[in-house]
Image (cartoon, rainbow, N blue to C red; front, side, top):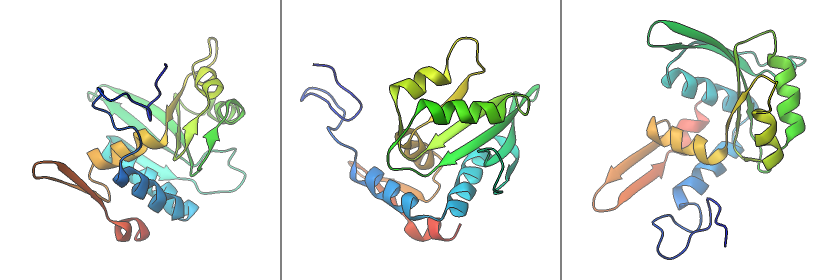
Length: 173
């Protein structure tokens, strides 16, 4: 039987479903306003090493929510355009294609972040031969990155790791 991220057998260390804190965090994020969600992504990118991160927040921006510069080793920099989708469902290949159209000629990389998931076709489209690659971050990766950066999430290690979500932190964005 083929397993996905949320299915595991008894001898796996992975849980069979999302951990409670992950579900709680996604629930908090889904309740955020679109502009607050964009500011959260801006903060996440800054904390991840991006500089000059700006949220465009304009209608008619061609699906672009913001842009920034990723500096690598003090020698290289990449101009990145990002789109943040606060969705419960899956992002499809047409959204990836549309976003790529907004990126080409305007930036070195495109970064598509969602609270949901990506369809198999969207993942294939993001890395299609002959087209500029689009980097994808799904809801599972997003909440793990927020935890790693301690953005609205705190972790305590007693005997078992305890993770708690701070909804007030998210509503202050």
